[in-house]
Image 1 (tube, rainbow, N blue to C red):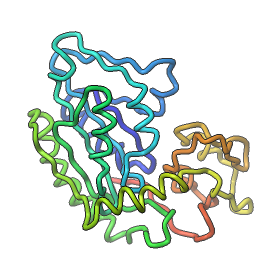
Image 2 (cartoon, rainbow, N blue to C red; image 1 turned 45 degrees about the vertical axis):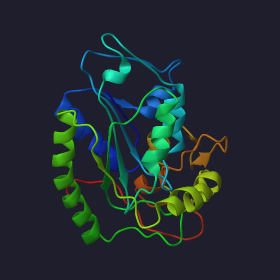
Image 3 (cartoon, helix red, strand yellow; image 1 turned 60 degrees about the horizontal axis):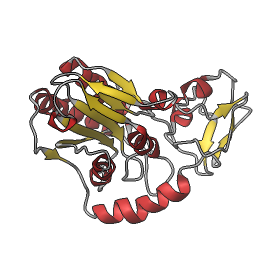
Image 4 (cartoon, rainbow, N blue to C red; image 1 turned 30 degrees about the horizontal axis):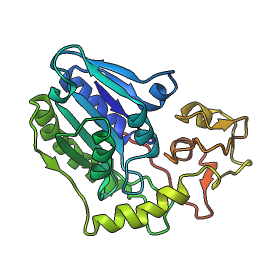
Length: 259
């Protein structure tokens, strides 16, 4: 089984490829969290995978929340005997995101035995020093990611342990625990979203695509109840770019295999 979260589609693309390669089922984390309990039974020999985007050089809050709620058991051997892995997508680097993920997994008696990072087009518009990739750079990243996925799929299909192909960056501790710490404490919020009502066509796509049902009424309004993951799905998928975050206007990005 493969648990995944996505906002702009980068991680969905990765997770779907892994599902096709392994023949194992995909579970969308926001949908799983809406259930009364998150209890799963691994079949004999089944792999356990986690796919997530890096948010502020850390795993997204919603992924960590899910791991804390999940209960995994096995209908055969012990859960620890099953191959467990994790794949993160990131704009340029992922800092110590996998270290943080494995701390969450350790509390459940689990460990990602192999971990991978896939560099994808940037989608974060919340930091003034981060910029979306040009169309040419985005295409280059996707082509490189396709090549990287060939090797990742092979390693996962063959249950190869001890492989850690990560892109931590020059100062991973600073990225994850200082800059990322600030980001995850102060910028995971829906209070900075606003709508250009002259541009909004009230199509409702933002509400339908929000993974945590945080958007109500049209023109869109956010609940401000702490449920927002700041995945930016509403921002990037808006067909009229009527949704903005903060006062710095940036472009949009949604994954396409045909870029």
